Length: 213
Image (cartoon, rainbow, N blue to C red; front, top):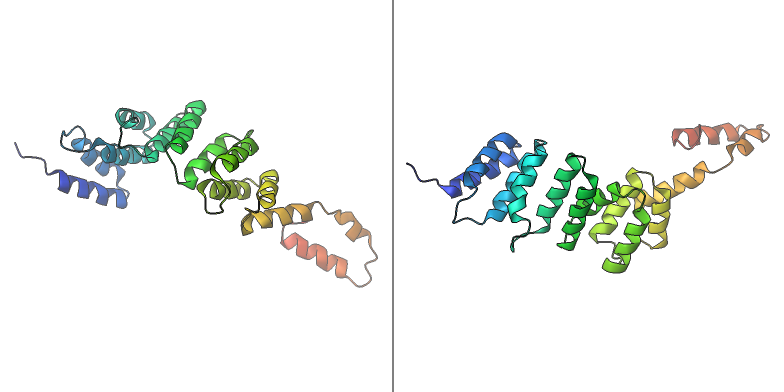
């Protein structure tokens, strides 16, 4: 029986992942699983990624389970477990594992973003907790996630909070400006004497900016 060349197998699997050939990469990685001389963490990590991309959520959890407490683990393992549980619709489990990824030192805005998207009723509690625990540097992963969620979900409360904490970027600032413009009483403009026609021009411009009906 030919001896498996694990280095070639690994390199080929990485090439397949780069080419997004998830099924082939999965088969190559499955062949590497359980080899006594290999660290199981990178293999499980790559295999779980392939399974997530194929919506094989339970298989992903089965792959991750043996390494979730491994001494060489990194935060992406818990993050992927969160993704798998979310794919299965088990949102409480997903929350727990995203929080575990943060406890494991996640430096990825994606972890914080995914958790915030599951915590729609507790967004402000989460960001206040992170502010106290992790600080408020604009470069921090949770700040990037909060900005993204504010912009994507048009969350004016979150945008205002980021502005107050001096953490708002241009997208968040734009959201705040647009919201304030939408609060204008445009009937005042319409009711003004229109002799010079400037009111119509202003309303037309606001309409192009989607700030007026």
